[in-house]
Structures are given as structure tokens and as C-alpha cells.
Length: 217
Image (cartoon, rainbow, N blue to C red; front, side, top):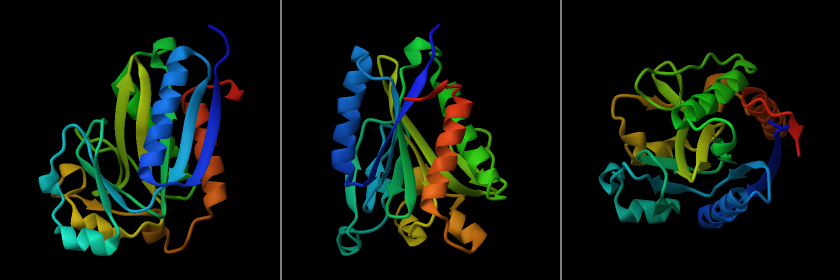
């Protein structure tokens, strides 16, 4: 097997639909072999997304509240239930061709979790997993959500790390359909803001390490 490289595409603050369309474009390019694996990094305006296993009933806020808060709703083609994206949340969309090295979706999700667990350890945040549940947790509170899609073994969608989002927005839904767990953020735990550029650098380092890339393209 030849060397494997990862391309980073940091698109900054971007509306959900344009980032979704960009994923579709890059999935096609990855399927055709014209690009290496890609990690898209983005921050979104407020949005609720409903995955294939989800239901709109888990959005518990009335429409007038969503309109007041400027929150849009989309049904999308990833696994999982309802989740929130918004300012202060670092979202990653890995476009990976698992067919080239490891056709195991569950293992890929575990690796996403491992990247975030290692990243948080650098901030002295002890995070881990809860058996039977997807995502990264600090105690009984979720700090990172994960939802994956796949097309002919090329992944899309991905993970969302709560850095300093508006945690009140999570109260408008049943996050991931789980009623007996909470939601937290790095800012809430650390009681201070996190430097975004440093955070992204650490995330990229651990992503390259966990997925055993030879370097960045």
C-alpha cells in the first residue's frame, strides 16, 4: 500500500446547505480518485439536523421560537437522530475512502471519538465513551456528537465538538434522542474561552495520528 495523505479544507463560518453541497462535491471527487482523503472544518449558523434514525418530534420548541432564534431545520442523509450545530461549535466532515484501507464504519466512528478524546486530554478534560451510545462524553454530559454517512465506502458528515456554543439551544431538542443525559462544552468545563486556531491545530494533529496518515497533502 502506498503512502496516505490528508487534505485539510478549513471553510470558516459557512451556512449548512452550502457546506452540505460541498461535501457532496468532494465525495464524488473522492470516489473518482481525483483527490486524497479530506477533512473539512467549519462553523455553522444555528441549525437542527435530523438524521435517518431521527424524528421531528425530538424538536420540542415551537416554530415561533425557532424563528426567533434564527434556527433552521434540515432532514439529512446521515445516521443518528436530531442534533444541533451553531456558532462556537467546531464541526468536522471527513471525506475518507474506507475502501482503500478499512471497510469498518463502527471502527471509523470509534476513531473519530478517539481523536476528540485525545484532543480534550490536552486541555485536561477527561472525556470518554458511554457503552451503547455514540459520541464523546464528560461524565453524563455529551461534549461531541458524531453522525456518519457513507457512499460506496466514502464517508461524509462527521463530528461536532462543543467549544463555546449557546448551550441553551440544546434545550430546544432532545439531543440525539437521548433524554437522560446532558450536554456540555469546553468553555463550560474550563470556565474560559479556547483559542480556536490552536484547537484546530491540535485536532488536525490527532486526526492524522489516529488515522495513521503519512502527512498532509
